[in-house]
Image (tube, rainbow, N blue to C red):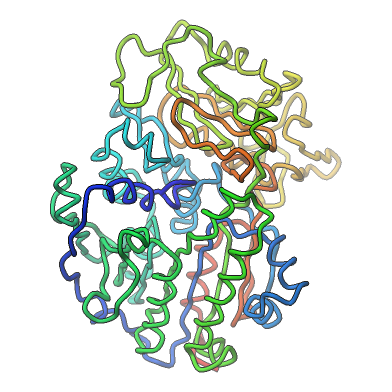
Amino acid sequence: MRKKGKQMLASILLMIMLIGCQNSKPKEQDLMRINSTNGENAKKVIFLMVDSLMYQAIDQGISKQELPAFKFLIEHGQYYKNLVSSFPTMSVTIDSSLITGAYSDIHRVPGLTWYSADNKKMINYGTGPMEVLKLGVSPVMTDALFHLNESHLNKDNSTIYEDLAQQGLKSGSINGLIYRGASAHKLSIPDWMQATTSLPKEIHVKGPDFLSLGALSNPFQGIKNLPDGLTKRMGINNDFAIEAVKYLIQSNKLPDFLFVYLPDLDRELHKEGPAGLHGVKELDQQLQSVLESFGSPEKALQHANFIIAGDSGMTRILPAEQNPVIDLPSLLGDAKILRPGEAVSKDTEIILAVNETMAYVYSLNVDRSLRDTANLLMKDRRIDFISWKEKDWNYAMQGSTANQIKFKAGGNLTDPYGQSWTVEQDEEVLDLNLNMSTHSLNYDQYPDVLKRLSSALRSHQGEFLVITAKPGYEFTSGSSPKHKGGGGHGSIRKMESLVPLIISGTDQKPEYLRMVDLKAYLLNLLTRKNQGIQ
């Protein structure tokens, strides 16, 4: 999974592809146990998470009459352009918020890469081939394929799959990164992969009733031929997912809730930038084929509620000649920075975990305060803001001016999501609009920034800074991926945080337009009375 975590599994697998290949063994009989317990008359919910889908592309494509499926779903449903994503805007964190209904201070998946103070090791779910090679293929794959769902994701915070199982409803996931549920499954590791790693032949995991994860867990094997070979990113691709959904529809095997992850658009936009329409037009054709699998688009909405969401937006990264890459080690003087693949030692002073346009900067030196490190970083005017916590308080310092804001949960200011805050010093640092007469505050450039930022600062143990880059720039440390002239995300600004949400087949509306609130909405949609086909 290269980008936000989305292509994380794909890029890990692609790296190992160089070694060779062998067919994996047949998977479990998930298809035998996923039929809705409510019978064929129960209206299903199909959630399609589209990596890096942006409303600007949807609007442009519809205006050019090039997106008939999107147009149909929007005309027969609800269309929102301001669903607030999680922070950092990386897939593993976003999907964790969707599936658990909590931000990272609760679900405990801080980003695509982060440092575990408990284990004294870097956690990297697959940022890019070079970093994976330096960190070691086995530890990266073990974290991505096992620890992410089995131990990193907070076990005290239930997933939608676990909640549905308790209510006797069936659920499924196709290529979802966060899939923890109540049913036992096996990920089958091909022989050729075992030969180059320390991974076992089988990894036992818990997931929804139906779990498909590319070639590693393919319940369709021997039943339907799906594109899961080496040249097809081991099944982590749109074609695999779409054909799998169509099979479930046509064979009357849809579970009550089905999550589908579609990664292809992200790869295109990282390379070409966020303005391209090619990938969205391909996606539209795939959506049309899913709708037609029911017999017609109209019949599709009679049998299922369709929910389509982007997970994050994307900012265009400036071309190489405009110096878009912020090299963090060069800003930190003679500090002893942990290099990829090295073990943490008593001499290690700083650890960097780069998530594209956002980064965690960890301080292990008791003689160097977080403010000292922040003062070094703020000299680079390409940095948007630098943030840290001190007890209950959260601080953010503007990179270009050194102006500062401090805030904490609780107080007499209420935001649009019913959250209360105390805010002091310069509210313009986070572009807040305070109204003292009504005791309210509103967000602009940084949606839900107080909750999302304070959650990231409390997402895991350790002394660290959260830093974000200004639009057009991204961070790097050593071999972390770069996207000069392409697109990037990770930060908390509007462009990367506001994503489209399309709901078709139901008039029921979410209480709030935030990714973190969709779990409650989905559970209500699935369990409310009169869920039968109209």
